[in-house]
Image 1 (spheres, rainbow, N blue to C red):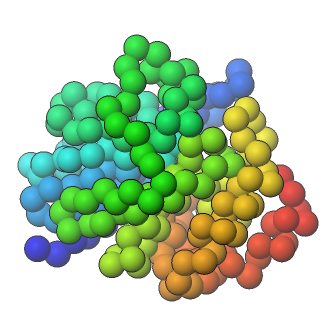
Image 2: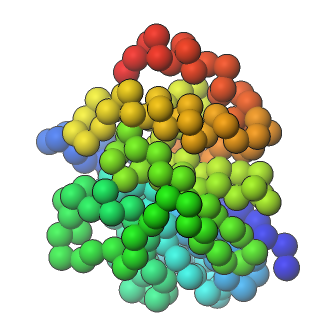
Length: 209
């Protein structure tokens, strides 16, 4: 059965440090005709469940715990029985949105999450958030970067729990070492490739955040 990547955009709000902004989020569904993984259950559990359809949802993987990436995760898990995965370093952020419901399992750097023919290797990439991770599948030539790397540069680091030098280190050491043809599927906006972003590292460093 062919493994594929499906893309859904959901809309809602991002809130942190007393501010709230309207946002569109990318939700990624990876798997085959029988089972799947959701990366970042944002805003709309019903829409995500409809996109998954009658497949078995084995995991909901959170690239980080900003509310706009996790707000629909408990409802989707309750509906499907899927396991919610998060890096432990983002638990304080998670509790801001879901104080009474912890994730089901902790992501660890280097582990591989499998479903529907996908093999998603966890890359711990702190900076945008302490527990931010990216998910790399060499067989799909794809890395899901959440808010760590976008088309045009790093994720934002101007708010609580974030740190610009750390995100630069994460991108340089964990992402730009991937094959240049690797597709970068982001948490917001358009996809890009490692090869398209790699030449701009020094520019990002000079620009700062």
